[in-house]
Length: 322
Image (tube, rainbow, N blue to C red; front, top):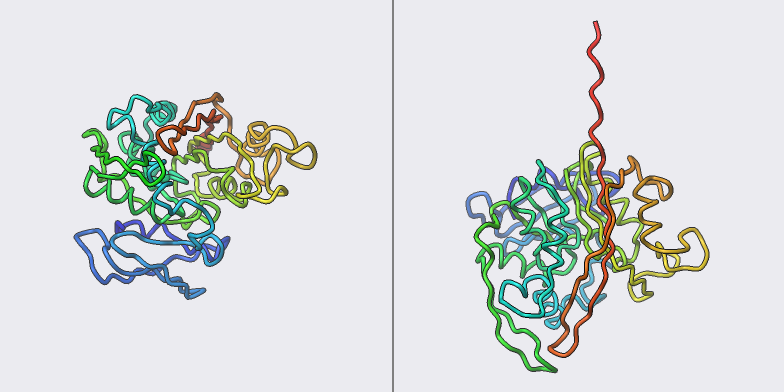
């Protein structure tokens, strides 16, 4: 973990109170902490840093990797293919990440990629902003993303069928600036960052996969700057009780506060019309991108991911007086 990030970090367990974390370094390489810990002076929680990876999860359900299938080797294979298949020349590869990247103009400041999985969008954004932080609560995904960050290439076993694997290798394009990227294990519903840290935030295909979707939207709103920030939100709205209780869904329901379509409800929340999001976002654009994931050589999922781009315009300076 890059040492300078400590200034941005707060204890996720103590939110909404923002308590800065204290760094203890056991092993370091220049400005990177290889081994150590982050401690909260209020609740006394200790967050480990191992092999350069900081795990800053709130105590509780989100700290249990067994709660989802995202720690498995099959999930890792599926997401590495989805993110990077074009880099190893797979004819079935999709163009979703390039299309999403085209929706973000160059911007100053720090970019947050919430739910970054194995890192493709974070690397894409490294050429458009000063620094990118990708977060995900899958330790397997983040360890793999950091391996790519360090080595710029990876060999992995792509699931062929059943227990059969085929070796695949790819390298990151030279234009992607890995010096401008870091990955942390963190929960998108309790982001370990100070308010108004980020000039741009993305949430790609995540809101229907977290237990509390509204909390996630409120958290990215808190972490983004209240003036002059930008947002890219995408999701297929595949609501499931495996991810969240029905009462927490933001769409797909015939009645209740968030009845109707997810895209309409999320847009309304972002605009500040309900859900308590302040300051609101100004919607710039909407559309859809086809995203694909490969479970094995004969099983692909083709997903239409709806997107919203939004901004919080800069607050005009008051005219000089006197």
